[in-house]
Image (cartoon, rainbow, N blue to C red; front, top):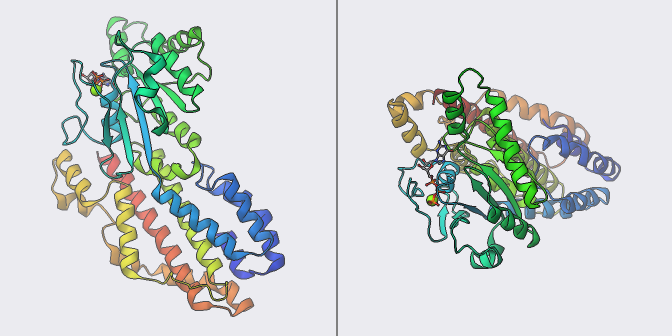
Length: 414
Ligand SMILES: Nc1nc2c(ncn2[C@@H]2O[C@H](COP(=O)(O)OP(=O)(O)OP(=O)(O)O)[C@@H](O)[C@H]2O)c(=O)[nH]1
Ligand SMILES: [Mg+2]
């Protein structure tokens, strides 16, 4: 049981709430330290103030609002670069689609992106990747480009190059900054640079040194043109787990506004244990906020307490987690096909498919009893609603652990 919530349940009265107001920020910071959280600094101070003043309904409203806004958040990501740089490949990789999958962005050796084209994420319709026409054509005009592509609607820009960044890329980056948006430079195809270097200089080849040279070259090229805030991420669209893609993920997460982070974290492909852990952190934070909200609600007189232990709701929650981690039925079918195994073989390896055995887990009642012991003795308060809330909290953490473990297991098989 989370320490903060159990201290809250033990004594939700004046003096203890003041103490909790002081402990709230350090506790929350530890909870979100790996990935950054969804509460904005303003919301954090409102919650602290509400605890300080014992206004539990204010705290409940703040949490409710944050969760609702995060749930609805949209994300529009603009991908720009010269023809052939790998924009469409990058979009497909982020959408978890192979180049030949239905609805994937067309990839080719001849020029393909002519108009700005939206690509919706297959699982999250609120997420759109915009494949924008390249900067390398003779009639590219940096002065009107951003207006033309409707810059205001994008959350951030990714400028892609597979060789060196051009003057146009740099001018555009500066303009993006001037209009108050963020940009990131991504250098693709480093896999083929490494391959070529190793082929041509087998005696002296050093992977690390080649990557450093590419990075230095891009940076020198950009700083020469006068772009401030320089960061270049080296990637291969064929292998996102390698090179700088994990660093790019981390940077984007930290730099996105809080309410959009959850959405971005959920769309990340399962490329490594670390990316699965990031998703897990965000979902854990949501479970914690829900639990804190329902704990507070159960102590507010006349507050309708709606969170009961509703089985269909729990089943739906497990389904959502499976979806987030790519363990929904459709994904399992695709994985089976990829591995040349039967659906049943793959399903047999997954513990998260058995809702009933997770719900009936023997350890849950014991944990609930342990969680209730401390406060019952003191308060004798609204026990049944707290028990329901605790059950939901413990079960959801169990769902999350199980789904994440299964996702790691499958990732290794793939
Ligand atoms: N080796 C390697 N090849 C890549 C990578 N990314 C893309 N490619 C290849 O580069 C070629 C062009 O990729 P696209 O994704 O179509 O490039 P684009 O930027 O969308 O091109 P346009 O639509 O013409 O502007 C394709 O043959 C891809 O398979 C990469 O990271 N590594
Ligand atoms: Mg393209």
